[in-house]
Amino acid sequence: MQTTPRSKTLSTHLATQLMSRIRDHSYPPGSKLPTEAHIMASFGVSRTVVREALSHLQAHSLVDTRQGAGTFVRVPPDITPFTCEPEQVASLNETIALLELRIALETEAAVLAALRRTPENLRHLEQAHKQFARAIANDQDAVEADYAFHVGIAKATQNAHFSGFLVQLGERVIPRSRAVKKQPIDLPQKDYLQRVHAEHESLLHAIRDKNSEGARTAVRAHLSNSIDRLKMRRSAER
Image 1 (cartoon, rainbow, N blue to C red):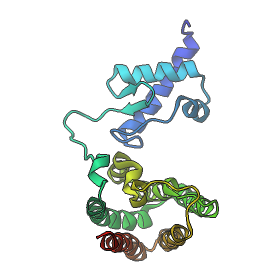
Image 2: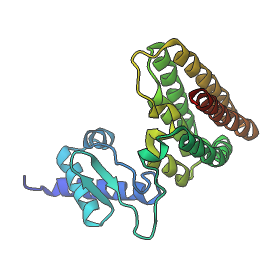
Image 3: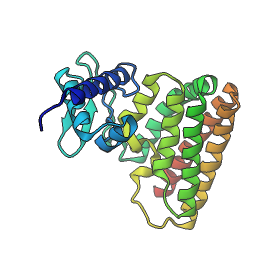
């Protein structure tokens, strides 16, 4: 299809906006860009315009397109990203070790989120919290909502390095994501998820109230409880 002058102008404008989001780490290194359909809807442009803009980003070595997977922000060659492969959290011991690391990082993230969160950040957190409740009501494992809640806190810090860390790891940071999914979940799992949801609620309230010390206490208690639960499971499996 031949590019029209208007299409060229729109694609250049879109490429500039996407570049800005990459450079300010709204799309951190290694993260996946929104789908073509999402970009079309968000910016009110055609698929042709989106593809031309993405080609422009590729030409500037800002993104890579992976067949069947999507378009990803390139990691600068002088940055070695933190990685955590699935096999690295395949055991309870490694899952506990990852949670210990998360306590160190997410405690500070919760403090900053309480101090810096915007109304939009709060809406995203509340949406993830409601999604978690709906998953429990529908006897689902709520891994996606759990992950979205923690990423939402990281984004509320207004520091892209916190969210970049969780985006790099993906849903495997949620301890139960390593388990075989059961549909529907059983009663003990439902009770466990309700406790996690209550812990999230305490953290959400602290961030909503801009209570930084309350947020610190809530997230540390939440992740420490997760470690304790895993240690109990480890003891039971011996």
